[in-house]
Image (cartoon, rainbow, N blue to C red; front, side, top):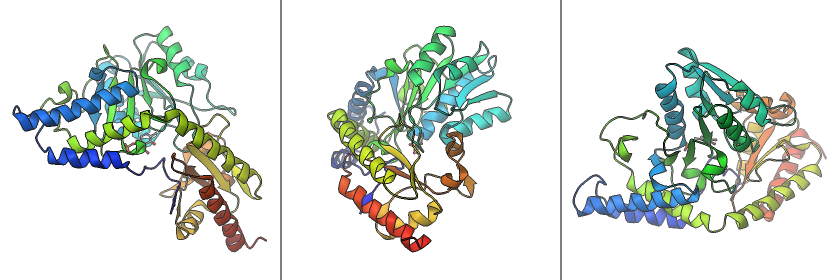
Amino acid sequence: MVYFDNAATTKPLDCAVRAAEEAMENFGNPSSLHKLGLNASQIISASRKIIAASLAASEDEIFFTSGATESDNTAVFGVANSLGKHKKRIVTTSVEHPAVAEPLRFLESVGFEIVRVSPRADGFHAKDIVSAADENTCLVTCMLCNNETGDILPVAQAFRAVKKKFSRIVTHCDMVQGYMKLPVKAKELHADLISLSGHKVHALKGCGALYVKKGVHIKPLMYGGGQEKGFRSGTESVPLVAAFGAAVSELSENLDDRYRHVSALSEYLKKRVSETEGLYFNSPPNASPYVNSIAAENLRSEVLLHFLESKEIYVSSGSACSKGKKSSALSEYHIPDRLADSTLRISFCAENTAAEIDRLMQALEEARRTLLGTK
Ligand code: PLP
């Protein structure tokens, strides 16, 4: 099997699975006052320490959630519910993941003004984001790395300038596709809030985190038993949190080596694509090497995806057509419809190899021959 769909989800590391299994044996409720509860709460503290260190943040700035969708919703609604009574403008980009875009669409329906900044022909400019913010703005939310094209957005520059101009605006970054891939720390990003997901970094599904900078107060999304210092009620999933910590701990050791390896893979893919007739590389030059968007002209993404699947090569459609709708991100990135409909997302992890890219290329050439009847 060749797995090139790591932006969708990653294979759990052995250490993550082991940590989850051990935590299941330690089945106490972290809120219980007896020894079993204490053991469970220590597992959570250990993971919190690891996630905090990965962002060069402090432990009391990390709150565990059920995943990045919850983190993003908490950030958006948390700010809207705290500051939105008087400040009704929110600045974002036109290429955010639905976990940010949809909560914003809801807020728009109840009277918020949502300003969506688009990329120019050469990508996003920090100053376009900054100039969209004003004194009536409560939130600027901008992803670090686009999940369809890998584009790395100028978040640090934009947030630094926003904060300089309007220190009370809250800044939020959906860092899901950059976390444990790009060497980014919380403070360098000038973000008040950062969303993370466990299953994108070789942990398990159903666990994420929200970084909340010390001194930033937003309303919780969940009310109840007061877990996570009252910020995210609900009994913590100790096994999932344990797996998240274990995976991040292992990945933290070789971030640079992994980046180098994946960059070489991305360069190789780019070269092979440029040498092959009818194939195009959509991702911009500054994109993360982990997420690569390519197009196979005249072949529909879904047909290609299933052709590749028949050869046990797993990719994502990238996604030109998601449930019949065109990908707005691809058209926002000025990728012509003709290619957007033929786009595949090839997303790497450190375990992938150049030989797997050769297999992909061979399969794509075969697809062109059989499906298009080319020589
Ligand atoms: N944000 C981005 C950029 C993503 O790519 C994803 C998942 O695809 C999410 C948020 C949602 O993450 P989760 O699956 O943890 O809810």
